[in-house]
Length: 263
Image 1 (cartoon, rainbow, N blue to C red):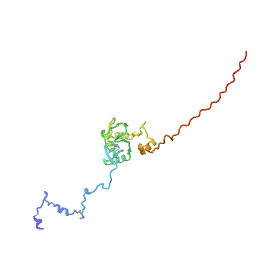
Image 2 (cartoon, helix red, strand yellow):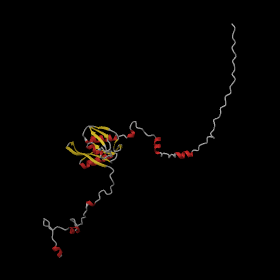
Image 3 (tube, helix red, strand yellow):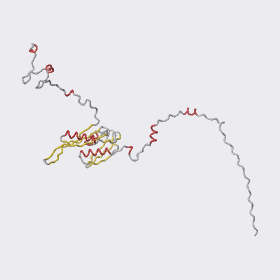
Image 4 (cartoon, rainbow, N blue to C red):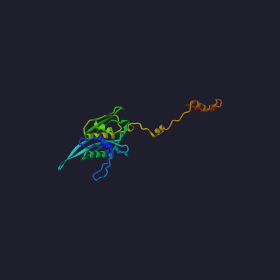
């Protein structure tokens, strides 16, 4: 052993063993029981989802409940999950599924929500009109709101609207507090939305009016140039009105006088 190694202070652990320095640990290789080299893999270096692009839909788990079913041998416990999925625009879906564990239930509910996606109509950043929908015991009232109002709603309605493009809304739950029924009532209310142009009595633009709006306005000539382009005829050349000839009078024919009879 070199003299430098003898003079270097030894670091001893509490258990009495020598502590390996960082430089020595970096050069040593770990081997398994059979003597083969073991590769040291750092999970942090892995780029998880590097090839995956941006998600088209975003999902949120609204509720997870434990349910039981009575069978011949006793009770069978399972989990029920309520999941909403949307694209933060005008598409939303809701799914409910059961599974033996929470992960399975959430995954099944997410796939159901994606299959049951609907597209609803919006008026800017709010809904088109007021609506009140009832699904079993749930009764949900939704009203459009002015810009800057925000979403005034309960937990279930707020979670669903957070996945859509609706930014201003006033909502009130008037019936049951069951989250599943409230979620389906909100979904039905969004499905019933009708755009302002399709309302009864709304003026519909005809084809001719639409074409006129698309056509560009024709540029008018200035008044001075228009007057110069039109040549005025002199007054002398103007045609005089033809003099009317007097109509020839026909000689009046005298009727013979009737003879008076002598009595």
